[in-house]
Amino acid sequence: MKKWLMIAFGLMTLMIMTGCSSDEPKDVAAKSLQYLKDKKFDKYVDLLYYKEEVEGNKDLLKEKKEAMQELMQNKYNASVQQNGGITDFKFIDEEVKDSTAVVNMEVSYSSGKTQKHNVKLKKIPSGDWRIDPTGK
Image (cartoon, rainbow, N blue to C red; front, side, top):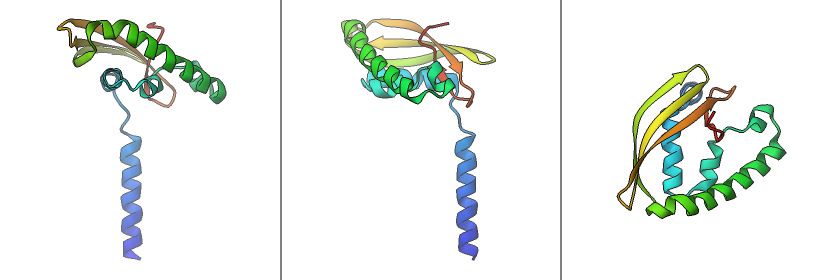
């Protein structure tokens, strides 16, 4: 009986800890750049804000994610590869206002070039942060 109580308590503690560990805007911005660096476009598009996710339209959401994945892969090949690919990135600062945030990052490329990027995010009803692809 004691074993079952200890197991149940451990599971409850784990569930509570994971439920309270939503990412901060800077964490989501860093993840997005890491996914681009690693060319994991499927993971990157999961971090984007879609109104269909908020509205619960799963079929249209799946279609949009697939289309966005292809678009991101083409965009990456057209723009980021010109600079030799992402080699590193670092957090500069963030500004959070209610359900929006702007995270300023510096991105380094293998060509030696560095650029500052503003990653704009929105909070969805679940409390998770998503990248706003419209940049608004």
